[in-house]
Length: 159
Image 1 (cartoon, one colour):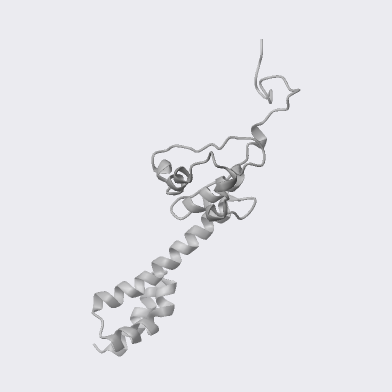
Image 2 (image 1 turned 135 degrees about the vertical axis):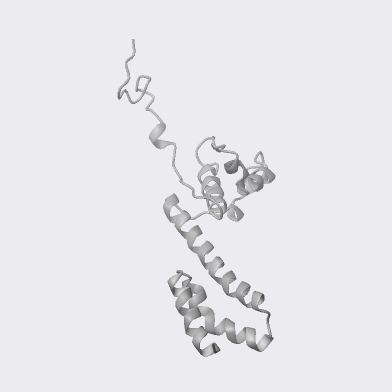
């Protein structure tokens, strides 16, 4: 069979398989491959690399959307000089997300205004590259000082 038969089949197959980026870039990458005399595996690798990058970008965007961060913060914008007791190496290590693979959590404690939320969001953004994440504040867990323990009393009996 001639190339004229398989070219439309390749485009149709990419569309059927849901490889929309590869489908859209097929002609452009095929022309680059012909001009550069690429091997078949080089051509295929380049075509699929674009697809994988776009899928990763969309996954990260969804992870960030579902995390429901209250603001956009990045670790690179955090002022470590304002918090000299905080070890930047520790934050860099947490940004790798290794603790997630081990099933551990990170809880940031401290007085108001020291950057806990900034760090939490920054770590979440960093980890969203590889993990699904969720952001929550401790506000729903705090009890007013005037409330008896346990708080709230839903379903609890105190003798």
